[in-house]
Amino acid sequence: MFVKRLCRSAFLSIKFWDGLCVGKQVGREFSHTTCTQTCKHQSSPIANTEKDARVFSSIPGPKPLPLVGNIWRYAIGQYSFDQLHTSGLKKYQQFGSIVREEILPGVNLLLLYRPEDIEHMYQVEGRYPSRRSHTALEFYRLQRPHIYNNGGLLPTFVFSICFHRRNGPEWHRLRQALQRPLNMPENIRQYIPGIDTIAHEFAGLISASVKTAKTSPDFLEDLSKVFLEFLGLVTFDTRLGSLEKNLTTDSCPYKLIKAAGDTNNEILRTDNGLQLWRKWKTPSYKRICRSQEYIESIALEFVNAKKAELLTKNFAAGSQKTLLEVYLTSKDLDVKDVVTMVADMLLAGIDTSSYTMSFILYHLAKNPLSQEKIYLEVKQFLPKSNSVITSDILAQLKYLKAAVKESFRLNPISIGVGRILPEDASFSGYHCPKNTILVSQNQVSCRLKYYFKKPLQFIPERWIKGDPAYEKVHPYLVLPFGHGPRACIARRLAEQNLYILLARLVRQFRIEWHGAELDVRSKLINRPAVPLKFNFIERTDS
Image (cartoon, rainbow, N blue to C red; front, side, top):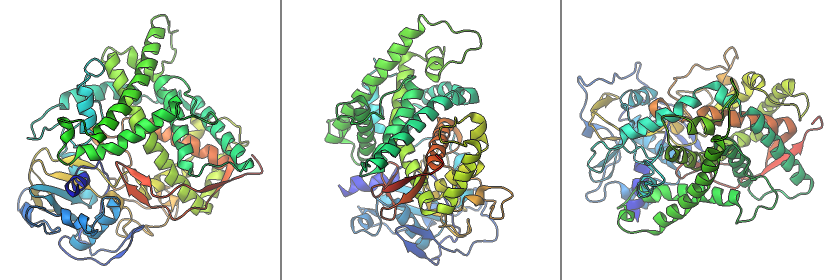
């Protein structure tokens, strides 16, 4: 059981960095929600070149024991799988800015904190960046060739157990075909009116619940519903009814949210350990199967309905196709590819967006002056709470966007990014062999004094050029959507949804926090550790 839990740390998808005091103990200031410290850094970056590189075994890190590696440290509570950010900081404090952790005999993690090392990781990740993730999901889909052509975009583990290349080219084909339409701004902007309508409706529901004193025990439930409604509009060209009152446990929205959550909860359990599910249907694998069967049934229903509609639909010259219509009429994609894309969007989009908005609202509630600045900015363009949001308005919400980025710095969606090194390379002057598992630690690094002034404070102004608080930081420190070939494929859609919903909520309400201090729990992604207890006070000019 401990082996299974330990490996889960090894292959998490993660993204951020810092440090430099290689091999030295550094001063610390640490608690489970505090990640700040000062470090004696070298005067110049360490060149990542093979010449004169030190041997891999000399990289500092916790000393493994025979047969069990470093798993015993997790068993006794020295490190924690549920709080990877605190464990990552402890290792940084003990060993410096690059750490080798042999979690099991022969299985090495290389933890990277310096942004220069993270940048180099992306430079050498190759054409088909590899991580070990969603292996059971891929296994499930490959057993169903009548529905799927491949494992989809999420697995992308392009090495087998023996590290031979596997599905890289097929992943790249699908990724390229799906990415092109998402790179076109007009394809993203067309959803602004619909998303704004949903956000306005959501704000109205909050207002009604406040007046009747019938608020949810955990606001995260409400956020999951509104982001599912956003996804339904984008992926299915329709409303799913997620915001309807008194949703039953048998409703489509409820079952989709549960199916996505159940799948994500089982990914780590099935990714690591002995993977007995490859021969026997373990309880975790059965939950993935049940959840995916429901998601794919809904995807098939809507995709096939849209395909039938397109047989009789004539597009006027210059008319705008929805993303679903673009994909279904693409010569580079078939229906199976589109079903896969829709299922991946549902699986990846609900939790990531709702967790992200949770932390944004938390920081604004805890920092009322920043919240007021957003309100005043939004009010300039939305004089009334029912004023319409347009693409021109979104482009001018500079402080709002800075606040979102500052929230990403303090609470990224994951601790960093995981990669399997495709070739020998050097990091911080150490030689690292091919197939080493790299794990960036930017959630830790983004709370260090060396990289940010007042790193634990929420200061959106640090991102606004010309502001006295503006800071010029390394470009590889804050990358909430990743970088390179594996960067989030739907980044523009996700950001647009966040901006619209945040503008709507702050325009109509003053938001207060009445819960416990909000830390994170490291699951597949960073989840709020406690229920969300917000108070929404209606503004008098709404």
